[in-house]
Every structure is written in structure tokens, then in C-alpha cells.
Length: 105
Image 1 (cartoon, rainbow, N blue to C red):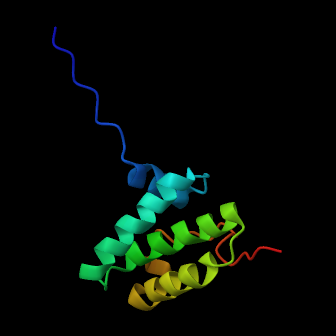
Image 2: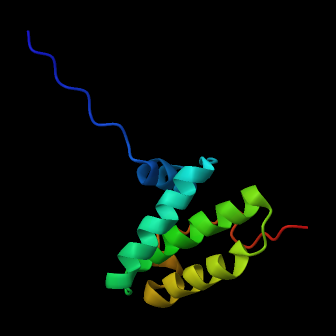
């Protein structure tokens, strides 16, 4: 009886995306990998609202986890660009889990 091969392990970007879009903490290296991949993608696809939203969500999570205010303007820019692209109701990556507008104390 042949066994079905196991599916490939998720990439760091896939792990971070799953975490960011479901409100689960992601590993910091995975978040950086996701952000870097989305930035590369957006250089050639600047109208991809979903990618902007995912980048913004990753930057919000990085800012929260690292308590580094340098991430806030980058997150805000990405999230605003996503909202301009297709509106709040049509960006599945932007879930209102109460953290998107959070600022460190």
C-alpha cells in the first residue's frame, strides 16, 4: 500500500501569514520574512491591496512584539494603502481584532 507523501512544511512567510491573520503570535524571524517577501512583491504589484494589508499586519505585530515605535508609521502606511486599494469591507487580511490601532504605552 502506497503512502501519500506528507505535504511540504510551510515556509516562514506562510507561518507568519497564518499567525498574523488569525491573531496568533508569530515568530519574529517569520514576521520579518513575511514583511520582506510582501515588500518585494509590492515593488512589482503596487496595487495588491491584500499584500499591503498583510504587510501592515506584519508590521503591527512586529511593533507590538518588539515595543519598537519605528514600526508604527510603516504599518500605518501599508494599512492605509490597503484601505485605499479596495476598502475596509473587502480586505480579508484586515480583521478588527482590536490591535490594529493599538499603540505602545
